Figure 1 (cartoon, chains in turn purple, cyan):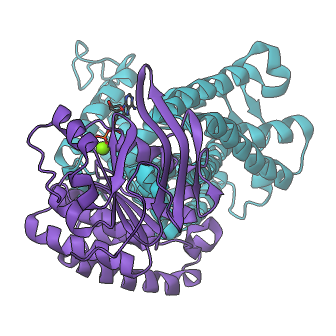
Figure 2: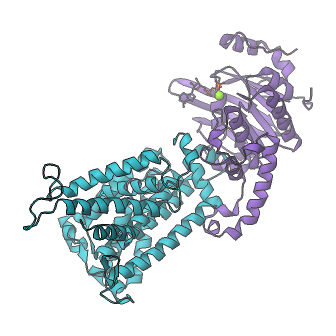
Figure 3: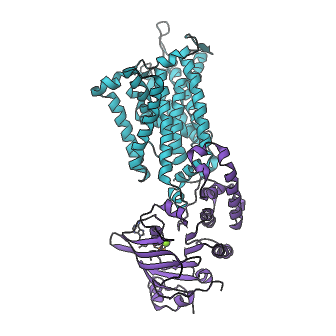
Length: 276
Length: 336
Ligand SMILES: Nc1ncnc2c1ncn2[C@@H]1O[C@H](COP(=O)(O)OP(=O)(O)OP(=O)(O)O)[C@@H](O)[C@H]1O
Ligand SMILES: [Mg+2]
């Protein structure tokens, strides 16, 4: 197993020596339903952390709360020591925390390469006055395009470069969305089920990409239902059920955790948690 | 039937100063709806603001024209801010409701008896075009285009208008191929995706509303310069829907779409109109019109022209759903 060694307490809310993201008392209710009620969670820097849990556990809602797409009823979250709660989504992204969506958001009537270029941060030509004069942004555009093409090749999308994104298959859209998020060069990547609908062969290479992100110094937090994938790449696993973090640990810790087994058996009996 | 008259007049209508006004109004809407996906149903309101920001200060207060034109800029920006600030953070339908309401409020205000001292009410305002006449280099009797006579003032407006269209269209084209335009298009496709990539969606929508609104105001200005009178009934909601028809015809989110769309739209309307006019005409020497009176007579053909024109446009849209310049591939996906 390739996971880099970690040694944190395998208990919910455990301290990490170098946490990039610290969440405190975040709560979000939809009417009477408490979708997220996370007491304390720390996400370790430059590690791959998996967020797992049965359907409806609140994982996506938790992502939304962290990335500014939804506002918590109460609680705080800190990213690199900066408060995130109440911050607009685009500002969170500019701080270096970029997310993808469980339901992919390909920009259908734009080409694949335009989707990619959009991701790049600090574009001179995104200012309306400079945009008017192509010489002011053309050089940067060429750099961005080169970087985009490189990423497209890595994600097996190079041949789709000039197709409209709306014409991609479901799995290809997942790939495009992840590649596009990487165009931002984020410090932390939040992936909501990046592997859903991606064929097994490509899944394997996706796993390598995610590991590659860690090697580049980035932090990854991802939601995934496929336990084999989770086990293979994550350094740390956080388990949510009914909005609450019920367990944390390495895949070995989680596999033998009674609370986790109960939570999953309550929801879907056929889940293979494996482990120890 | 005098076909040379019918055709030359229809062609002239398609390129006249009036067409320039439609092109500008539609170009602004294209920025809003075509590129950014903003559902603006009040483009006529921007046009009205452009028209009256020019005519009120000049006719009522003798402002020098450059100052009045400055007011056109300021007023259209203010209107965009007023419309945008409360609605652009909300769902798309709110902008639609607010714009249609505000455009109607503007028109009713211009029409109201109470403010006739300012706006001229139902009679509108005249006498604000002298500056344009004074700098007109063409002789007053103008020229004859084919069988169509064009007076010097209209010719001058036509020439300057097309220069304006060229500038505006080039500007929009340059902006839309830039990274700025790319952000607008991404907002049209999925604004949450744009946000997730760090784009300040609200700011871009606001800029789009301002730019498109300003271009629409220029259109309104040209409309009343051409008519030499600004009247509230020219800025009804129908005007906005004509602009939608035009950009759909020409091809949504194409810089030359509004130009070609306007030319087709106005040509078809005018052609049907004067053809019917001729076909229903009776004279003392020739009392039987070309078309039997039970179908259409000389009193009601002006309603029929919109029916016929509507059918013609419907056929065009069916034959070429992406518009003249649209990208066929885009039709394969849901618009929203
Ligand atoms: N906008 C909303 N309005 C009402 N209820 C919501 C909303 N968003 C989420 N919920 C509810 O919150 C709970 C958590 O949903 P969430 O999407 O976060 O689950 P999840 O862990 O991502 O599940 P999955 O693995 O199926 O994606 C669910 O019961 C869901 O019905
Ligand atoms: Mg989810």
